[in-house]
Length: 248
Length: 219
Image 1 (cartoon, rainbow over the protein chains, first blue to last red):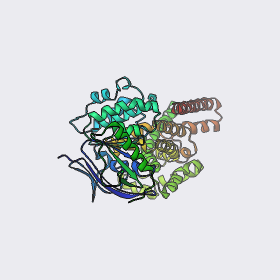
Image 2: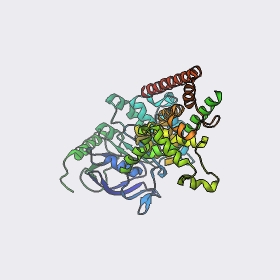
Image 3: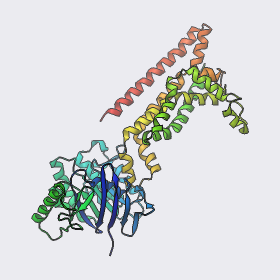
Image 4: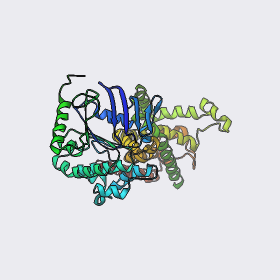
């Protein structure tokens, strides 16, 4: 069986002590939620190799980090969508999309035209990034991350800076993305609707550790549950993240 | 007169190109590294702004003269002295204009922040690749300002070139020194011509910088 992501990471970043053990299946979206400052973004950065912590990170048969091994960010097959999109302002939309694609090793399984169609970018392709709306910027960021041919997609609250209207407009794109992808996706989110629409599983992070809603190991699967059940679980996950931790 | 203008333009061009090449990695290091010695190095590199040009010129003259330890290092390559040579003038001009190159480029790199370089790394760009394909293009206005300032500053320098250049026609005689010599020999009409040319040049430079600054701030 193909392995997904296996990560054990620990270390001190500012005042936060992070100690995380995380396993993701080879495909599907895992929503990561929890209060501000609980270490979600730090975990995303550490998986991307942007913040250096101790531990192991393995994806499939590749080791990105272990004792004496630390692959720098540019050697990790990742796609990262930042909260502020992080588009390269000196390039057009096409320039941003091409940036990762040109550097990704052949063969390219995720194709330019498919991603442009999927994210509805064909009308924006030659536009300057300065002339994009917030929602358009995030769609470009997602398309760009995919075209880098990632084995792991990390999304750090990609919709947090958008107003409810823009969020509603972008969610169908994310759903389409979700259905067409077969790679592990770690998706940091605070919004119940977002989690319920996209997530296959929910993980809750508190004070630098991943806990599930009931504080047992692993993260609950949402497969086969009704929409109402998923929404209730999403809310419970958010509540759990925001509740003071009573058990270790 | 054309010869003097040509020497000046040649000096300013060579100085600008070399100084941008030298300043880019230094500005990058100063913008990215967080360390106590960064402030010390920044202060040392800014010294030419506050030092009187004659002081700078005097020390440069000593450094480029045949007896200096620096020239002793170049003796095996057949170089005895660089004082009163075009190469010496280029070195002097580079030292004199160093802060004018480093400051705008460093500011541009600092304004860029960590975000674009991190985004480039997640898109598989190595640090050198990201530096060339992201940092330099994003800091292009800083580079333009630096190039214009260095060129203009070199054209306008007087004290340093007089000290280490010696005003040798066709080699080290530049416009600013020629104006001084023309005034000394009471040739005011010729002096006017060159002075007015420099005035117009300075005005154009400041206009270009103002336009660059405005377009840089535009959304």
